[in-house]
Image (cartoon, rainbow, N blue to C red; front, side, top):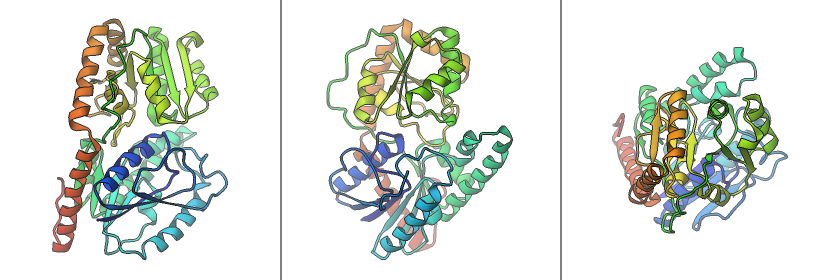
Length: 374
């Protein structure tokens, strides 16, 4: 197949969505598809073999933009639209659209139009509001966009059952979902750690609910290691605001995914404090691959080996304390997660599933029929 992916961001990068794209697109290319990615300028790290990356010309600040709405993205949107008009003069079987600008800007055509649901905007947009009174407006805008993306697509690809169910409710013609893949599984996992640190790996944006985790750390006097692409001083300011002692906090600014994996090897347990997620928190996967247990909200992460799912702040704190105290239990849960990842989370399996979904949606489109959820 000839597949054009469109993503409004730099590529590659150690951040979650770009790590996902690197795995997915590399596996599609390895399977024999012609795969191209249209994206912004910028990127750090090697490009997967067989993948054609079509970057915009550099614009000031393009690579430094943070997540969330920004007026600075307008110029990038104009440039992306112009590049897409040129790209779509070529014959494509699938145009696969990621996040916000891509499904807004890409026109319909003879190709299969796929919307990749990485997150629910009704959930995420309010977290960027500086004034609480703006949150209802942003939530309403997010709901409008979520419904529009679902209804314009020939196929919605979700990363979790929650996301797939929401897309079906929003009127998507066809929906499928699959947990992302993870590689680097053939090497021996790091040995069980004796270090009693909890690790959070990810950005510091509001939707991650990091403030809740910091309060738990302060109240229970845990030791927290934060590995992030954000600047360290911002993380320390957040920690001070929640009363976390400096001696109980490590904060590392990283620019590569290998640095994240190295940090995982030095911790006892990972944590995903996010309360809700209609996508899939990519930070779960390197913990599973490394044989480390991870504590996460049941409303954010599907049930799977290696993940201790909780439903409240109190349960989250208790689970962290238990795994830090009972190292044999933590090691056993971690081994189960690594075994699950080795069996079920190979990128080859993810791409096989996606190929079947592409073919089914193409057949339904030609025949004028659609499947609500598959």
